[in-house]
Image 1: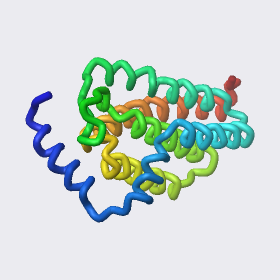
Image 2 (image 1 turned 90 degrees about the vertical axis):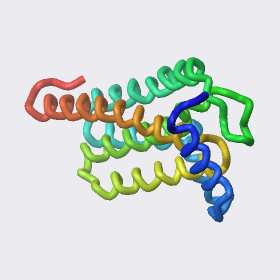
Image 3 (image 1 turned 60 degrees about the horizontal axis):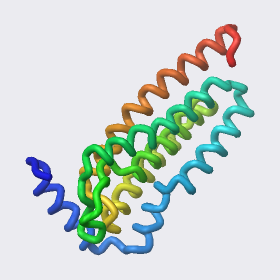
Length: 181
């Protein structure tokens, strides 16, 4: 692998891995990107918001969006075959970060769904902080390079933008008298 971002990415990743950030909290936040954590949080949010609003199309949109994460990340990781940081090297398939994408999309969808139900702005700020901590934790623990995390945030932003559009259209339709799913 080569390119203009490789040197700065490796220097920043090494600086974060060798920093004074405590390993315990870093591992905790890195684990928030696991599907075994993020998917139940999303499922509970889906159940609550669907029960409260009766907007089934928003739930379907969220499920499809979340299903797109592994469907997009796994082929990209295989195709790009980027090696991981020193603890993981020479293994490949680290770009984009699946854990980062899972966390960003799952928790981002929770915010979108709660926004429609409650207009909760604090949840959006919390989502940004949690996802920043997940990314930092993944780099600190040596699971990913910083660019792996940033690439996943870009992918998540695209998916969440599309989901937000679809969810807002579905709730607008159902509130205007048009039957919803």
